[in-house]
Image (cartoon, rainbow, N blue to C red):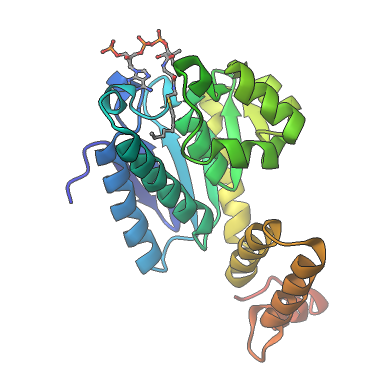
Length: 257
Ligand code: CO8
């Protein structure tokens, strides 16, 4: 499939998806989701990539679902579009490799929902974030009503969801929506620095951490702790990365995964 709305770049073991409809502030239309699913198929199939970075071209990360495309949707079609977006963002959350969102500009509605499906969020000082769906008489449809309160707490989440207010990167940092705020020119440098750190870690452990956190969040604490204990055992199999990591520490050398 020829990519029109997305750019995909690979540098070593780090992949980068750039949302690239700058004239529409990278708004998410059906084609963009189709392309994103093709890319996710590719990323899931091959085992070369170890980290994925997601960002936007121009002055936006992603300014939301494509409002023009949504205008003629029936109730059934709107629901189907919401489910399509949710399924796609679930795939990002469930990728076995860590995903870093570089929020370079507007991350609104579906754009913030995309960022929230990523594992680590970095924001440029130019970033503006929010769930402005209520301004349009809508509610979030790509996971925002659920992921936002889970990330920033129900009080902060409800404030943003009920007012539709846009916040800047420093406010996002204050409520824990992003990990770090950087000057625009430093955003990608920091993402690559984090990617390098992640590349040096055991890939099985990274995959297990993601799975255990996300699955555990759906369970009671006791069930989630059982899940953690079960997964904790996995790197200990003979020849496993956990065995090598422990041996390397004791032998004062770098692990050879
Ligand atoms: N969809 C389509 N086009 C958009 C969108 C969008 N979300 N955002 C911006 N654009 C377009 C504008 O229409 C404009 O196009 P044109 O040049 O042809 O007029 C172009 O991008 C540039 O935008 P502006 O001129 O408005 O740029 P400004 O810098 O003046 O303003 C803003 C930037 C503040 C970001 C402004 O564009 C804006 O408010 N955009 C809409 C943001 C928004 O409301 N996003 C949420 C959308 S709803 C959503 O995401 C719900 C997700 C779940 C859907 C469930 C499925 C049913």
